Length: 473
Image (cartoon, rainbow, N blue to C red; front, side, top):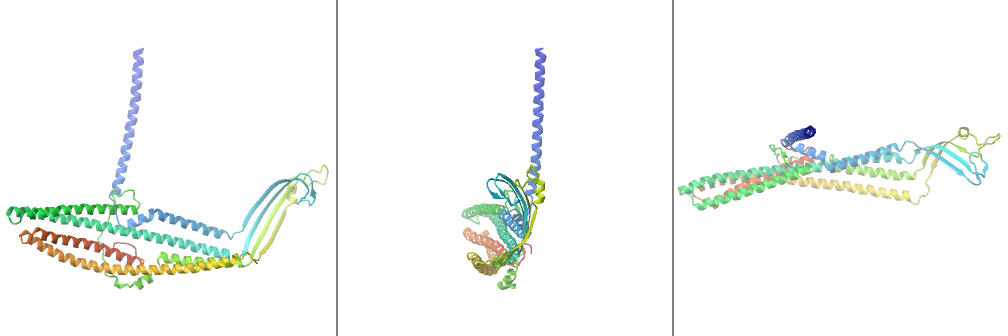
């Protein structure tokens, strides 16, 4: 019996253990499957190449500050809706239940009641504003203008984010090319080191020349590391602007950057004439000026009489309202509901005479708000014109620097090629060769920097003419 019992217990334990083992294997299989799906998603994300337009669009969709600005627009929409619904009549219902002790006139019997009396009142009141100095209509117009201004503010905020993304995008492109330049220069130096070793063995160059080149190669490899660090930091900054969780796997498109000619086709005045008609900060300031003018009209409306139409429907119950026959109990509630039913309709005219100078003070403050809005609009236009002037001058300056950088690269390239040939035959030493190569490398770096500076400045000039931020020309 013990043996059978023991075998049964062992079999049971084996069964339980087998079940847990199968469950564990199933959980591992599910986990591996989820990890596989996740890896596919990450791989697809890593393989995505982001264009400038995609970066800007993603940033605008996910930026928290833009979302907060959208909520302000939503709030303004509710304010506008409320002002529109405010022109509808108002209705209110009132119900009361109470007891009276002591002598008072019963409103339903017009008799004095001295005992405790129960009373109930029910009525429905409605009021319609027929005229109030056009305040309600002007309030709707003002709230509509405030909504438009809030939408223009969102557009302006989106433009600021788009410019920030474009700036960092071009900065990243610059570092990509800067890394490439340093790697190419290091490769040239490595090839020269290999050739110099042979020339040293042949007795054409000295050991010192070889050591100088090896030191230069080490310096250029350090420059590569520094450039790659700058590129990684630039990618990190751009990914943070996009609110990406990590810059790992994030890669941007490297288009053939189209270059415009100098911006002399459009003068700053012509660019300003286009921008002032469309820029959201100008539209917002103009709309807010109109809004303050409506607020002034609302304030002036307080001087006008206000005409209301009032209506009331009600009934009630009184414990003092008794039947005419014994035992003189209070009339039933249903009977009193019909008997005490009353209806009222009247027109009420409210004529302002004196209210402690509030209306005049409100109008005076509204006039100040209008003048302040005028100054805000003027300030926005002045600021926009100054920005356009600066952008125009920067674009022309960047174009001149880019042209000069091209000439400098051509000259230094010829000088370096000439120095390289002379170095190989021993006509110059390693120091002269190193200086020629350094000048050429610096010229290449300046060319790339001036190119992207010129592209950015040109984009800004186009941007103020209503053109989208793009690298496609």
